[in-house]
Image 1 (cartoon, each protein chain N blue to C red):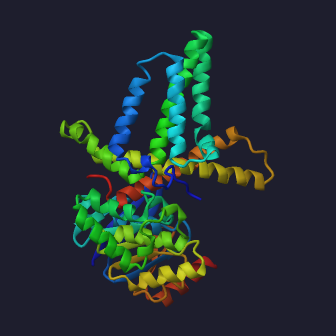
Image 2: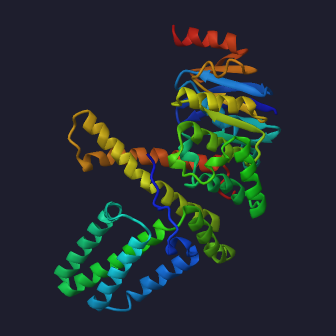
Image 3: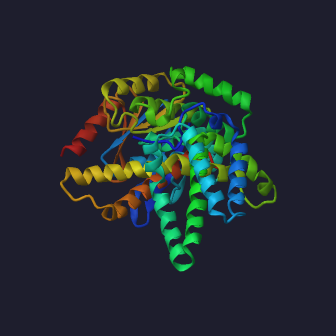
Length: 226
Length: 201
């Protein structure tokens, strides 16, 4: 995996959400931390092209997020802060199948891949359940399955343990640790990112620390608690 | 808590194919406009109510789902009765009541995914003519059926928040925050659809 930000900035009108950034990411597990409104979500969304750079460019495995938008969406999966909003169909298996069907995958292959991803996440028993009846942890796992069934290389998760109880938090963290795909996790949950290969700290739209979790968390505490 | 317009069950209407249900609804809607007989329309309305009851929807659930649609048609019917003729008002009431009851029965007995697939297939001829994107229409319908019930959930949250703060619960006062919350969620849902690559590029 290689994600490259080349002089990339993001603006919303007059507001600069992300200051010009040059950065290359190759690690399998990357954490993104920072105070609310620090630019970390804009950074994450710029990676899969949900947010277009106001200047510069972002490439993922050589694909430009603007010029090669559809290919980038196939390479980078995204799980939102509220995963309920990304589950479109009311039945778990139907929702997981939706992404494959919209890509024109045949019925038999769709069924096989849905069964395989449900088994991989240990949630085969949820296949015919209604998404509104799932617990927070189950919803998060189903959202991950619905994205990973399309086989992206990279998964971005925005606050995956937000509002989860201890049991569901552990379940999501265990699943995350077992993922074969590269993962970029935006989180306020500092214990979640402590075993990651690299952590980025954003503050007021700037990347102000980049390195091992321990050092970056110390920098974060210095910024947040000053 | 999220809700669903679909009601789980294995009734004859649940087992019927979506295509036949939609065709039946279409033909019924044509038929009730071919007659102006209050007697025939009354019979059709009663029959529709029985069809709705057959899918396993409780009376209170049906009342809660159909209250506002019935208020709307009652207003139209009363206006028609006042400005045209009372009998004409009754005809309007019975016609739309029949339609609403039948549509509610079809919605309650059909999964959103099945609706989406069928609508997409039905739209394919128009796509071949270059008029529409069939998959997008199917997706739009699915989104309406999946997320519209959540507006009611959001309204309930707002109502509870007002009550918790000791504020009087006035539906009109909650309209603005309800619209804002709904639009914010719609924005997130649109972004999620893009992120999952569900729309044809």
